[in-house]
Structure formats: structure tokens, C-alpha cells
Image (cartoon, rainbow, N blue to C red; front, side, top):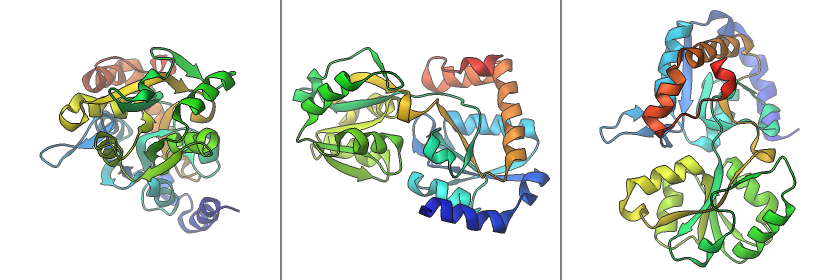
Amino acid sequence: MNLLLAICTVALSLTGAAHAASLKTARIASDGESPPYAMISSSGELEGFEVDLMKVLCEKVGIQCSTEVVDFSGMIPGLIQGKYDIAVASMAITDKRREVIDFSEPYGGPDNVWATLKGSSLATMPGAGTTLDLSGPANVEIEEMRNLVKGKVVGAQLGSISLNFLRKYFSDVIDIREYEKNEGLNLDLSSGRLDAIFNGRQFIKAAIEQGGEFSEIEIIGPRIRGGDFGPGIGFGYRKEDGELRKEFDKALHQAGKEGTVTKLYIKWFGDDQTPPALLK
């Protein structure tokens, strides 16, 4: 039994299903540093797409919600231990994570990409403007990437599927550096301490749009999705809180059909990324 499964077993005996049945309050965990999904504003307030979306959903469900900012790597263990009720951090739905927690319906599906500095030899990575779906054959494309990044220092966020991707396909040819926060990734790439980073496209795009020290960052290669990256992103719940998950899924579908999710995507991303299933 791995550590998360062991924690989950203990948590099940401690929390039961009482909270899910009451549906009076919900404690939300956010990493607060994944723009434009969630970030801390200049005034110190938590804001972003997920922040606005959860306000809408909590109102529709009719419960009081509070939000705590936590490191992404500790979010699932904290959820299982009962510190939070819902994990909201643009979290990819994967089979491995489903072993220990449940997920909502997907509310989005960000692509994962490589990024380097302008003028780097890595900027020649093929596939720009295309999408590589790992649910189909991708051996040729992966091998091309391996040859190009061989010997390089590459960063990814601790606990992320981006890091898992690097470990699975590139651990024998690159030096992988792990970071608690996205900002650390971007800063070390900008300063030259990293040759490249691998992360969600929207996170990197948001950093580039900040300008300043991040203005020399460039997204390279194809957008990568599917396979190990799962069907999209969802809210995380404890397995015993099925009633809570169902209530929020119902609210999520209502918000989708009403056009609220679309409006929030346009507000924070500039385009509509609403999954078709939420519009029905």
C-alpha cells in the first residue's frame, strides 16, 4: 500500500460521510499560484477563473465556502486527511489520482508544453502549432524530443502530471529539477538556471504576458494532451463525500448550460474553453 492509500484508509475511518450529508459548509484548497486559474492579486486577494467559478457553485449549492491557499504538492494528502473538502487547483484527472480521491466532471483541459528562452537551441523543437495526443501513437515525436533535450536541465512543478511526464519519458536523458511553485520555475528559466521548463500551457502563457523578466520565455513544440494527462481537469473530493461531489457537479452543469462558465473563461482566458459536455 502506498503512502496516499494508507492516509486515505485512516481518513475514511475518521471522517465518515457525516460532512457530505450535512452540506452546510465546504473548505476549499487552492494553490493560489496558477494564473489565470487562481492567483494572489497585487492587493493580496485570491482571484482567478476558479475563484469566481467556485463562488458561483457554492451559491448554487447553497452552502458557505471558505478557501485556504496551500502548496499543490500537499493538496491531495490534506484533502484525504480532512483538512479540506474540495481541492481546486486546475488538477488533471488521472487514473493514479483516482486511486485515492474522486473527481468532478471535467471543467477544462489545459494542454502541457515545453518552454525555453528565445534564441535557445531548444527553440527548434518541431511541432509548433500542432497538438500531440498521447492517447495515440507518439513514439516518433517523443524520441525527437528526447534527442533535442538530451543533457539539458529541465524544471517542473512538484506533484504535477508535468513532472510525471518528464520522469516517465526523459529521466534518463535530462536533469530534472522539481519546484514547489510555478513562479520559481519561471524565475529560474529566465535567469538561465534552467534550460527549459515543462508545464501547463496556460501557466506559461500567463507568465509571458506579465512581461518584464518573463518576456524572453518562449513556448516551443506541440501542445501535449491525452494519455497520462487524463481527460481534463476537475475538482478533487474525498471518496466518501460522494453527495458533496454530486451537488457540485449538478451546479457545475447548471452554470455551464446558463453560459456562466463560458463568460468566466472569456473573462480570464480571452476565449471559451468550456467542455462541450457542460453545455448540454
